[in-house]
Length: 268
Image 1 (cartoon, rainbow, N blue to C red):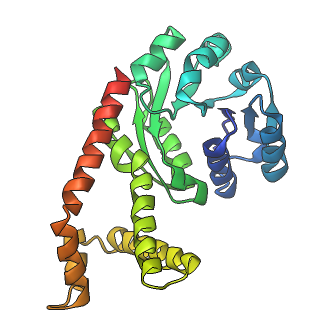
Image 2: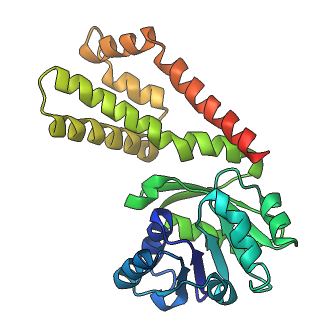
Image 3: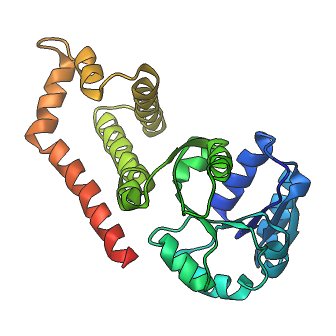
């Protein structure tokens, strides 16, 4: 890819994306330009990745073929209004903010342009992100694949219909928080039974990591994998019964659906 990729915003997610792009050699560092008012973030990114940096958002807009808006949702409107007359004619604008529909982005730019709405998640920071990619009708198949490859450089990605983005927000964007709570709770139980805290976190986190990998790499139904661990009359089925008694599945389903509903409300 010989295109220039521009970022407005150089926070955690922006730097995670830059790191994945550079590591995968999708473009050379010289073809990445980042704008931010935080000079310390810019200095850190420039030293780490050898990219171009600026405090002028319009400079990024004028140079980028693919422009990633990696700022907080409340900053989208002022940033877009600042740069809308400086972007290239055929720029692909990539948004990564929850609750920002493709139409809202087009409306703020005050014209129809190529927009790809993406919902990434924080595991991108360790190269294990999951991103939903949703291009508008001005984005060609090859262009959509280019955006997908960018996000696959620091995890996995899927092209989805925009109507699924609220569900993606809950099952992928927000769910790491639920997983962290699960890990913390398992570790607390281990500590209660005498295991040192740091060791408990390591055992619990690795169990989650390995279990997730089993789902992805074996392609087996999670219920089948669960049954493989549950020996008749054994320790695991005892724990599974306790989770069912406390409404574990119902609590998780409720949490995910509540999150989806909140995402829908924010998108209005």
